[in-house]
Amino acid sequence: MSSSGRQIRIIDTTLRDGSHAVRHKFTIEDVKAIASALDEAGVYGIEISHGDGLAGSSIQYGWALHSDEERLSAANEVVKNSKIAVLLLPGIGTRNDLQRSFECGAKIARIATHVTEADISEQHIKMAKDMGLEVMTFLMLSHMVPPGKVLEQAKLMEGYGADVVYVVDSAGAMLPDDVRAKVGILKEHLSVEVGFHAHENLGLAIGNTLAAISEGATVVDGTLCGLGAGAGNTPTEVLVAVLDKLGYKTGVDLYKIMRAAEEIMRPRMPRPQVIDRASLVLGYAGVYSSFLLHTYKAAERFKVAPLDILLELGKLKVVGGQEDMIVDVAYELARGNRE
Amino acid sequence: MSEKKVAVAIIGPGNIGTDLMYKIQKYARFMKLKLMVGIFPDSAGLKRAGELGIENSSEGIEALLRDRSVRIAFEATTASAHAKNAPLLAKTGITAIDLTPAAVGPYVCPVVNIDEHINAPNINLITCGAQATVPIVSAISSVTKVKYAEIVATIASKSAGPGTRQNIDEFTQTTATALEIVGKAEKGKAIIILNPAEPPILMRNTIYTVVEEQKKDEIVAAVETVVQKVKEYVPGYRLRVPPIFDEEKVTTMIEVEGAGEFLPEYAGNLDIETSAALAVGDLVAKHLVAEGV
Image 1 (cartoon, helix red, strand yellow):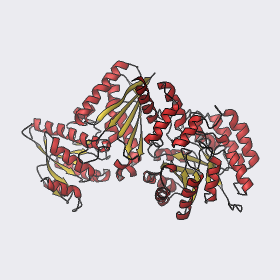
Image 2 (image 1 turned 45 degrees about the vertical axis):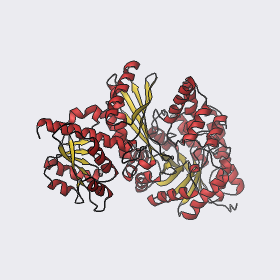
Image 3 (image 1 turned 120 degrees about the horizontal axis):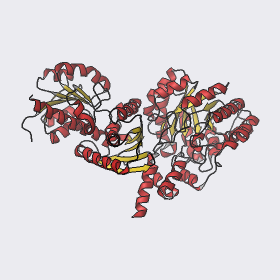
Image 4 (image 1 turned 180 degrees about the vertical axis):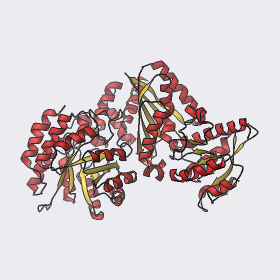
C-alpha cells in the first residue's frame, strides 16, 4: 500500500454513533468537552446527531437528553476549525430538520439510506447542496448486497450531488476482501470521493478501514475509544496513530487525540467498549449494530435470550431503523416458550 | 343489494387506479364504475378497463368533465395533478376522493371520521401509514388522553413507488399530522422504513402511544374492536402484537396483508389505500342515494 503522504480526512462520530453507547444521554457539557477536544486535535469533521440521525429522538430509538439543535448549538460555540456534520436518515428526519441544523452551524450533511434504497435521498441531497453544505452519503448495511449493486446505488447518490459516497459496514459484518471489492468498484467508477465507516463487531474496524484506504477511500470515520453501536467504531486515536505510521496525512495531532480519548472520553464511558458475545453475533449474523442495547432491554422485558433475538433478526433480514422488530421477535419467542 | 347506484370515475390508470377498478367492480354496493381516464393512450390500465367493458379515455380530466353522469371521482394520480384537478371537479359538483397526498380536502380514515365529512366536496385519504395506524390511536384516544403517538410503518421496497420515494418527507409529515388531527393525539410522529428483503415482507406498523391513564382492559378492548371494524373493509388487517403496557407507554403492532387480487399480497400498504377508497366511496354514494340523486 503506497501512502506517499496521501491526505485522509477523518470524521469523528463520537457524538453521533457514540450516542448509541450512552443510550443517547449525552449532556451539553459532554458535547462541549468532546467537541472542543476533537477540534483542538484537528479532525476534519465532528458529527453531532442522535445516533439514528436528526429527529431520531423517539420511543423507537430512545429519547435524547437534549434536542439536536441544543447539542449542535453547544458544539458550535466551542468548535473553531473542524466542520460540524449532521446525519439524516430519510424516513426518520426531514428537510426541515436539515434546515434547522444548518441554522445551528452544520457544515456537512451526511445523508444515509439502506444500501438498496438510495433513491429516497434525492430531495435531501439536493437541498443540502443548495444550502452550500458538503454532502457525504451513506449506503448502510453495505455487506448485504454484491459490489455491482453498491455501485448502482452509489451512482444515484453521485447523480443527486453527493461529494463523497460511503460504503458503510453498519453491522460490522464485512471482511477485508469485501471492503476492498466494494470500495474498489466505487473508486473505479465514480468521479467523487469514496468514504468508509466501520464497526468493530468482528474485530476488524482498523483492518477494514486500512483495506478501504488501500483501495482509494479518502474519508473515513472513527470515534474516541471506539465508542459506538455494537462493539463500537474504529477508535479515532488508534486510526490516527496507524495512519501516521503508514505515512498518511490526516491533519490530526496524535498527542491531542490520544488525550481526547483518554482524558475526555474514557471517564465518561458507561461500560467498556468491548466485543462481547452479543456484539460478535451482530457481526456474524449481519445485524445493524445499534440493535444491541435495545436487544438487551427486550431480552430482559420478555425473559428471552439476547442471542436468540439477534439470530432471529438476522434470519428475517431486518434493516436499519427496524428496532420495533426486536420487540416483535422477543414477544414471539416469549410466546413460543410459554406454549 | 341497492337498486340505484351512483356513477363514479377513476382518474389515473396506474397500479392504484387499476386495483381500485377491480375492487369497485367486485365489491361496490352503491357505486357503478362508469369511466376510467388517463393521459397515455397505450396505458395498460386503460386497456384492462376496456377488457372489463368499462368506458375509458386517454384524454384525462377533460373526458371526465364532459361526462355528465359521474358524481364521484377517485384521484389516483399525483399530488400536483390533483391540485389542478380539484377545482375543476368542485366546479362541476363531482365529489373528489383523493388517494394522493395533495390534502385539498379534510383527512379521512373511514373507520374514524367519515361521518364528519360525508358532505365534503373533497376527501383526502392521507397516507397508507395513517390508514393503518390512526384507527389504533383513535381507539386509545377514546379511552384516555393520548399525550404522544409515534408510528413506525415498514413496507416492502417493491411496494414503494417513485411517488413515495421522491416525497418521503411528505409521508412522515402528513402521517404525523393525521395522528394528531384524526387520531386525537396531542403530538404525533411518524417514521417510514423500506425493507428490500426477498420474498417481500408484509406491511407492518408499530404504534406507540403515551397515555394519561393506564386503563389496560379498556384500551385492549377498544383496540380489538377497532381492528375488527377495519377488517370489515381491509380483510388482511391483523393485530400482530396486542397492546403491551410499560407504565404509560402502550405498544401495539399491526400487519396488513393485501387482498392479492391485482396487486401482490405483500403490498398491504397499497391495498389499505384502495380499500379505504372503496369504503369511503360506497359511504358517500349511499349518502347521495339517500338524499335522492
